[in-house]
Image 1 (cartoon, helix red, strand yellow):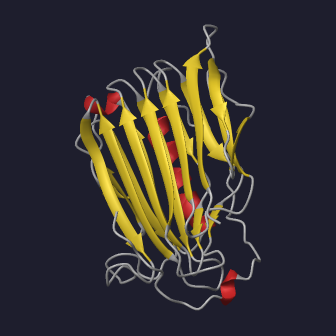
Image 2 (cartoon, rainbow, N blue to C red; image 1 turned 120 degrees about the vertical axis):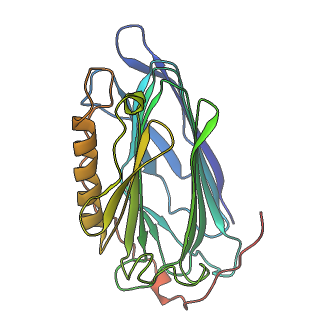
Length: 291
């Protein structure tokens, strides 16, 4: 049986210099927990997996509304593992994240890695509506296959609108059903960990950053707006996190003033492995269906 669940949260200023969470609704495998924040003005929410999900055919969603002048960090307790479930030929699973960031608000969206296990088929969609004076730090990391196994089928799309105008629209595909060359020297080059870090801050309007390489497997790209995108590939999750963390601290340390995003981040973790027998699934292309 497929699982369909939507977790919701809303952050608002509490009137005392902090942030309140008037809405914090868990659903199914998505358990939202308020956790201690090291940053006084921020609320912190940790997503805890209450069961194994997503499996092929599941539909999961998180909706987060950060009101004007609120400050919120969202992280997760462990990696998310996309699994094939009982039938590898079932419908794809979906994971949709909708984020709304108000005027003067700050969102630090820093979940742990997404692991695409062999035989799984996942469509991950992240949509962000960012106000003109809102600030966003968003990290996404995908691990293509558990240790010693090939990747499942994974399609991701990240769209960000700032003040109603497109800032970023990026779609990526990996695994047995991706277009040819996805693992070639021009794309991943055999690396199995891929990630990106998006930083949107109004201060970039006056001081845009130039495009540049960040070592042999990462690059910083300025966007057509007050934002930069760091993209990176690595051999494993630990190395990828190291590259993205270094880039994050360098970028945030370069921002001046108390209104900017804090450089404090959650501790590094590696994706957890699961011994659920799915490693014995035959390598194949799961069924894809138009949307």
